[in-house]
Every structure is written in structure tokens, then in C-alpha cells.
Length: 315
Image 1 (cartoon, rainbow, N blue to C red):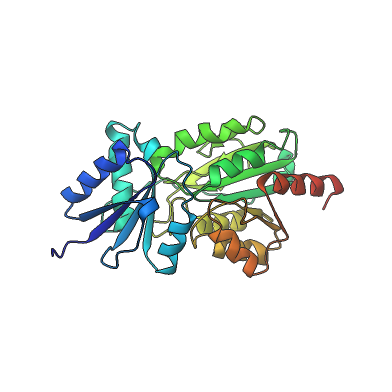
Image 2 (tube, rainbow, N blue to C red):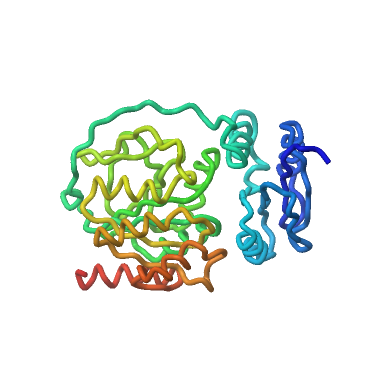
């Protein structure tokens, strides 16, 4: 048996072209690769990292995720159908991200060296009464689309979306979230104006800052972050800039977000959670509920109605 690290590729549904390409690239980078169908999955203790290759399939992956989590295994998610369409530079970025998740010794991306001074900002001056951070991981995009579709775009609310993803999927993520049909979704970048009734998607390779003119700037990302983007880091950044933020926790499998929720809670913000029954994976919200920080627990549609009702009564 070779001493090279072993990677387990779990195929959900028919193995996709990008997953097969990934297997070849892992072997090129001196990894051993074991491939298994999700429906026949069992844990191999010799495996160092499991990559779950997601596809448009009815198979419920939560049982696989639970087994891996209970065994303390390292898990990487890969959206194979999105990766199928990547070419050239974007395909290289995707591969580098996967390699970095497996082992941080792999170079990720060059650091961004933009420096901006930021003053405190009162968002009331820009028609924004509440800021809601929408935190999600696996299963999050579908939940957030359902959530945003309940609004009419006239509410005095700014939504800030923190969705775990790789940088090459950002453009596709904006398009997917725009399918809510009610709330415009923008990638948060330098010069973007903050406005009520809109949603800002936090980028992967930059941290956002609010300027006193109502526009965003960017700064270097924390290179030691737990995820891309990192819910804990973004919440800490926002709390340092804004008086109050609130947090809606959607479907997701990660520990990233627990510290962020604690900080929001300690800062006086409201936290609501998506029910376990309506989530693809409920790890983040489960932990928030255990810590008794969630004020309301509901489906994505019910979470939106909760916010709208509180806006009406002025709470």
C-alpha cells in the first residue's frame, strides 16, 4: 500500500464528467482515489478526505453526511454539474480550490491588497431599518430563493448573503439567487451602493466594508478562514461596522457560523433558523437551536413572514 493520502470520491447519481476529471487530477497530485456510489456508501478508515460529488439527483445525502460527521471525517462538497461547464482559467481555479480544501499547503489564490479606511455608517440614512445576514451552506441556495420570494422589494431591509462556495461559482450563484423574482441580488464589490430591498452576495476572495457614503469597499480576506466565504468572519466584520445585524441561518453542514451566531446574539441581534425538516442538512441551525439562540424556527417562507411581521409591528 502506498503512503500517499487517500481520497474518497462519493458519487451522488451517475458519475459526472467533472468528477472523473477530478479523480484524474487527484492521482496526478499523488493522491490515491477510491470511488463509491452514495447509495452503497460505507466508511473506509484509510481515507483521509471524502469528496461528495453532488448532482441533480433525488438521493438524500444527509445519511452519508451524518455517517461521515459522526466518524469525524473531513468532507469536501463538489457541485459536479456546475463544474461540468467550467473551462480554462475557471476550471483551474475550481481545481485549486478543491486541492486547497483537501490540504491548505496547496496554493489557493493570490492575496488582494486593497486598503480602505472605513467610517461608521448609520444605514437609517439610506432607508435601511434592518440588516439581515442570510447564512447558508449545502442546500442553502434553494432555501434562500424561497425565502426572498416572499418579499416585495419595498421593505426597508438590506440582506447580506453568506453562502459557502468556491470563487468560480460566484457568477452562477448570483443568477441562481436572482430566480427569487422579488429581491435583486448583487455581488458585493467595491463601489456598490447599499440600498433597501436588495441582497448583497458576499464574495469569496474579498471582505466587504461599509463606507460613510453608502458604498462598499473591499479589503484583504482572512487567509486562515474556516470556509469560503466564512460566516464567522463576515459576522464579526459587520458587527464592528454596524450597530446591529440580525442573522437567518439556513440549510448547511459546517461548524462555521456557530461563533458568528454567538457574536450576533451577544450584540443584541435577532437570530432565526430553518427547521431541520425543511433543510438538506441542518448542522448549523441544529447547533444554534441547542444553544437557545434562535428566536424563531420555520421553513424559508415562514422565516420571511416572521421578518415581515416584525417590520409591521416595529419590533
